[in-house]
Every structure is written in C-alpha cells, then in structure tokens.
Length: 252
Image (cartoon, rainbow, N blue to C red; front, top):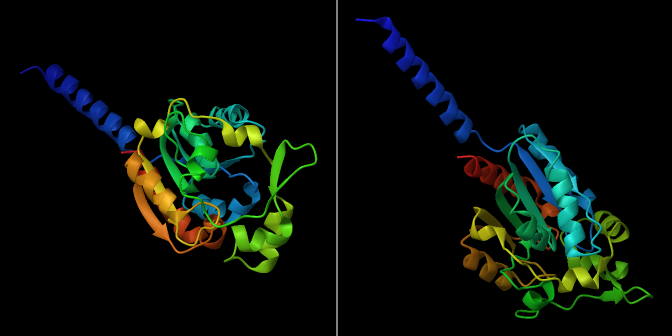
C-alpha cells in the first residue's frame, strides 16, 4: 500500500485540527467604549484585571459630538486590532457599540448598564419609556452640550464609590452633545452578534427595569450586579469576569 495517501490524509487531518483550534480560540481584543458624562479613565481597574488575564484592552475616547463621530472613533480603534474584538459599551456607549458592532471584526457585544437600542431608536426615545431617578443635568452656555452637575455627580452617577473617586469622575466627565442623544440607530448589531448585558440594580442614570427590558428583547445573557451606574468602577472584578466569559464564548 502506498504511503502517499496516508501522508496526505494525515496532513489534511492536521490542517483541520489547526483550523478548529483557531476557530475555538477565545477573542483576545477588548475594545471599551465609555459612556456620556464620563471618560475612559474610570475603566482603569477593569483594564488592568483583563490585561493580567491575557487580554489586549483598548479604550475608545470618543468625543460625544455626534453618534456618527463616536462610531467613527470606535472604528479607528477596531482597525488597530489584530484579530476579532469584543466591544464593550457603558451607558451611551451602548448606543455606539450597537451601531459600530456591525463591523466584521466584532465578535460580540457587552452592554454595561447601557442603552441597547433597536432600529430607529435614540437614547432619548428609550430613556423616556421608563425614566430613571432625577439627574441634575445642566446645559452649556451655547445650549448644545449637556453635563452632570459636579455637586450631584456622586449621588446620581457613582453613589457606591469613595467620595474622592466620585469627585474625580465628576471633574473628568466629557460633555455630551444633544445631537448624540437624539441620533437614531440604523442597524442594531445585536441582531446578528452574540450579546451580554450587565444590569446595575442601583442605577439612577438608567432605570434598571429598562436595562432588563432591552436585554430581554435582544436575547442577551444577563447578569445583575448590585451597583450604581458606575458599576465598572465600583465592581471592576465582577465586570471583568463577565467580559472574560463573553470573550471566550464569542470565540467559540
């Protein structure tokens, strides 16, 4: 019997095994999109935890000048990654990843106390369906941007953080354009990509019941964490655990 067919069969089997291993490998790139009225600095602990677990983490510092601008900023970061990425969005960042997640490089989506819109929905239209607790939102003098009164920031946004940390978040917040809040989603990525959702049960910025409703509609895998809207900063280990599980599952 010729050894050639056996050799070819062995090569084919080896190639198939390598291909399967590549497909089953977990996603190693984590791209985080922060929310409005905050910047990416509050994600430092989550980032460091994930890096120690072998992930490549990048934070998008979007301008929040418009949804299109923020999606473009996210795409620029995605373009820098080698291999597939898991997109993580907090608060308004959920709007961004829902649109930006249609990028073929995105393997899955994680919503962290975030808006999870469907086609034709905006942040404002969603928020009005189940309003959260009253937040002390202010307008800039030109009437084009919004921010959270620093004096009320801790109670409204980060009630479970040490005062110094809440004060820092208040002073580093990114003002959000009204245009970004009224922009509508054209194609929700969660309809074609796997998604996970973290509900912050003590959230005063987004009604926790709204977070639950949006996640259920999207068919997301849901985890509830007793935390404020700043769950990523007050419960970094738990948030990192969910992101890690999502990355592994998205890579299967």
